[in-house]
Image 1 (cartoon, rainbow, N blue to C red):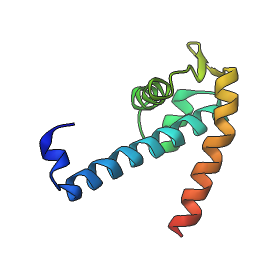
Image 2 (image 1 turned 45 degrees about the horizontal axis):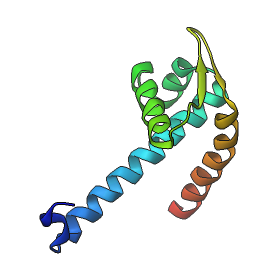
Image 3 (image 1 turned 90 degrees about the vertical axis):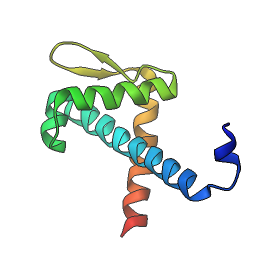
Image 4 (image 1 turned 30 degrees about the vertical axis):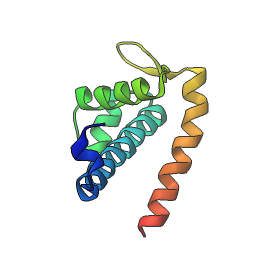
Length: 102
């Protein structure tokens, strides 16, 4: 860890951590919506963004988890076994966040 991060710049670290966490929540929401709709394009329309953006969010989530969440085809996405397990947990986290934010 760089010295600047260890020497008391907690405000900057807190903001960085919060940004990372918010990106993770957005990626989880994109994953959940894609799973519900069975399509990255449909999820993108529902989320008001583009298909490449949703694809990058899901790919980043897969990278951070170290697993494939979807089997992709040109038209649809299907959950892998890992994706099925993660879906319920992701839904729970998003619901808990929504409740906490009320």
